[in-house]
Image 1 (cartoon, rainbow, N blue to C red):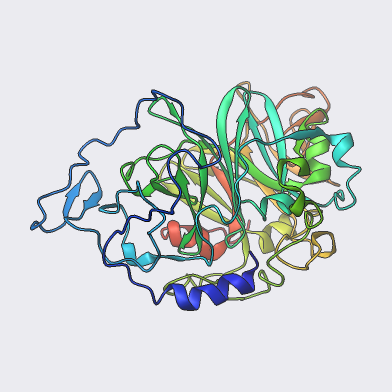
Image 2 (tube, rainbow, N blue to C red):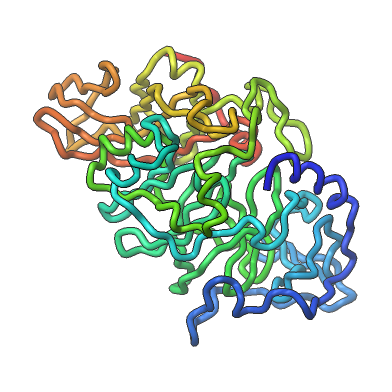
Length: 425
């Protein structure tokens, strides 16, 4: 669904206020979601989920607001037959339509993969093509944004762990989470709705709605639950191949044939132009930076810091300490935007960034940029943007990840308003 269609749909969607939940006989049922839930699975925890008496006022239970009746909502809920719309962790008014319906943005339930050499034969897979990189239990996979922009959700298993890879083009966030909650494996889809311009997903066990930005269930029986993050970075296909030459790449065969000719394109032409206001964002964005300024957000302990790409471009490397943890922030050019030109390969180059611990086997390292790689002063080893040593005494070593993500400033600040902004060394 293009950005123009999303905007057109918003005009009518926000005018619709649903005063009650009407079950729709023609709506999707529990078994037609792409994958059928495992028979006999234990439901994920919904402790304290009993609604109050119909005459009672909303109550707070463990951070969840429980309404006596379904509150007014500005989205169509008729196709959601199993979602408990009396349980919220957020203001229902903040949830609006993104111009699509349930799974209209088609999630991938059975992904297929190809080698790096096979991926390099695709017409649109240039070295600077942006990909989301996820590594779990020593297995790495890349998910091209030229594919993710048409699906937004991929249900996968990496290194033996069920994982969901999510991409919100409106926020430029590619995040990965474990799909196991309370011992139950979930599958995720797209609701077509957004909050603060951020993707809202749903699960196939309780039909609860989950916020991509923080992995929290915000509506339904699972409200208050939170998915466990798994490290994910946006970088170039070339940098991924350098760090993981034996890694796998999401194949176009994962999507229906109708998509194959459009993969490698963007549906969000011009979206990341400087100071471009975000769509579907209610309220005023934090004006300390331009709303579409790219940042690397890092959250360690009680410290939350945003590193603007405009500063990282000048410095290349930042050796720092965050909440007592020695951290290095890398930035390098060579990753195209997926929010600029219609063909991603023709887009501008904002670069990419990543952050890691500077501790390696009890030793504290200090890094500097050297060409398109990074060198540590202590051993002289050369490291990729993704924290893998490719030459020198530490070759083959991988830096430990920290909680960091690429994204647009307005979205990061909306979900983490106490963020400090890095101002340079």
